[in-house]
Image (cartoon, rainbow, N blue to C red; front, side):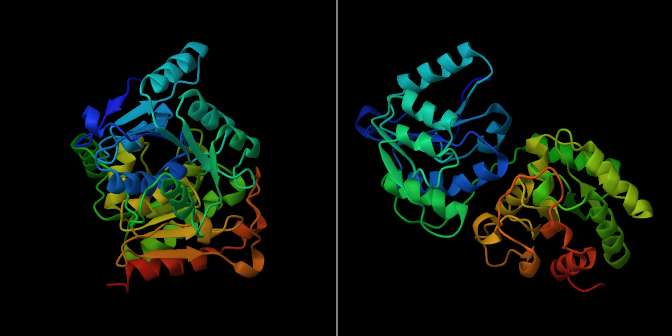
Length: 354
């Protein structure tokens, strides 16, 4: 996958403007990439003439296409030795003055080191997920603030960015809009809400069957049908939710990242645990209901910048412990969240029955 030039920041700076050349590293995953977008925005606001490139895994590159804060999106091919060497050569050729690693893993820190940038900024060892990766940085920072977005802004500010309001410039193209419009029309769906039963760790997910029960209740009260979103390997979760929902007739529409973005922006509400699609929906301005158990919503919750945007967190503090434990089964904290609690949260967003 070739590098992608963005607009309007796509043209290379003139030699006089060439003093600042930033390489940003957040290779994945979806929610984490979303939470790093305001850091790129802060750099662009502070250095309007700088070159700002972002290295990312190809599966998430669509999220950055059309981002006016970036000059180039660089897909990182880590599947072959030749691909890794080619990526490092490309990074070195760009002569970056500063590499900022928002990920804190060996794979991202090694790319920052391999780029040859004289300044390499990342998190302190005690914060980074793979702490010893911090040895490859020239500057290390303890994150400030409560939320991951604020943590990422700490690194941007270490590079010289000034504080600015967080923004999420996510571009949705016409083809993706048209694809979603066709999919919804074929299923006779106009207004809808989105249910997302999947996620990276099962321990922070809510049972798929409960999403089905929730759908039946929302349909009975509001007459609103749901679209079940799911990722690779999560088809069984989507079908389990649909089976339990019965005659209320939710639908599962398999969508790539671009069309998913278009779908979420149209949604009346998004219901999900702490996963990438929840954070993407929040960044797109959709109303969201976030279900939290072993992760802390103050740190990992939807980051809302518009006071008019509705967002509700459902968590039972007495029954929840913030562990960030990556388990393969539903955690007691998530099982403690009842269908009635989530129905009430969705109702508070959709408003009184008409």
